[in-house]
Image 1 (cartoon, rainbow, N blue to C red):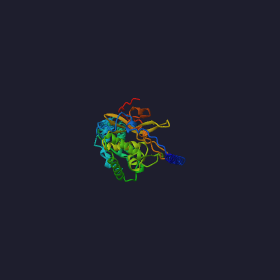
Image 2: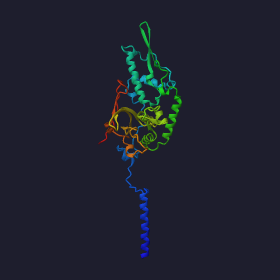
Image 3: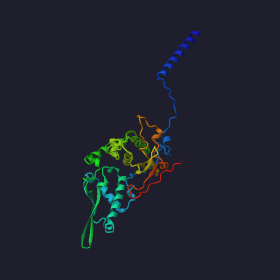
Image 4: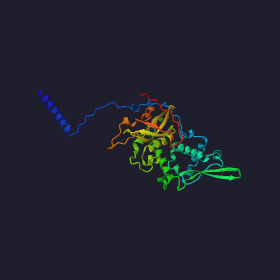
Length: 346
C-alpha cells in the first residue's frame, strides 16, 4: 500500500513539475469559454436570419430618384438610359425628338429652365444607375439650336461633349477599354452572387460580409476608381462611395430593394464628414446599412470582433444620431424625399 502511495506521489510531483515548466515557458494556455452569441444577437434589429417568412418584394430600385422628378426631366433621364451603348463611345451625340422641349424653350428663361431639368435628370441617374460610373456628366452639356422661319420658331436639342473636353469619360478612364471594365465587373459580381445562398435576408448579410472581408478602405483617397463599382469589385480599394455603390449594385442584381443615400456622418473622432450609405426594404419597412463603417480601419492586421461587424447592418432610425441626410444631391439642386426608417426603441 505504501509503495502504491509512493508511486502516486511521484507521478503527481512529475505532473506538477511539467506544468510549472510549461507555465514559465509560456506554452501553457488557459482558455475561458464564453457563451457564443448568434449573429442575430449582434444585429439587434428585430429581424432573424433564420426567418424564411421575411417579405422582400422582388424589385430593382433603379427608379427611386427617377420617380421624384417631373415629366420633362424624365424625358432627359430616359433618353440617356436608352443611349447606354452610345455613351460607351464617349463622344456620340444624344438627340431628342424635334420640338420635344418647345413648350419650355418658347418661354422666358426657357434655356435656364431646361438646364435645370437636365441637372435633375443627371442627379437621379447618378444615384439610380451606378453602373454608369465611367461617365463624367460635367463633361456633357445640353445644347440648343434655335431655328427661325418668319414667326415660326423651333428648337433642336441634343446632348454633346462640353467645349474643351475630348469625351464624356472620367479623367482616369479616358484611355481605358470601357467594355472590358464592364465585363470584368460583371464577372466578379457573378462569382460573388453564386455563393449567396439561403433566404434573401441571408443573401443581404453575405454580400455585406463579402464587401467587409474583401475591400480595403483607401486611406490615401488617390486609388484609381475608388468611388465606383469597378474599384470595389475588381481593384477592391475604395472609399465610402465605392462600398455603398457596390452594395446596391449587387442587391440590384438579385432584385432586393436598395437605394443610395448620402449626407454627413459623425466619425469615431467626433468630426463630421461627407458620407454615403444605403437603405434597403424588408417587410415593406426600410432599414439603413453602412457597409463602410462596419469595416473600420484596423491596424496590425487584427480581426474585427463580431459585435462591431453588424453595428450598422439593417439598423433603424437610431442611425440618425450619427448620420444626417442631405436631400439635394448637388448644390442648389432638387430636394429628394426619403422613406422613414424602422423605428428602433432605445
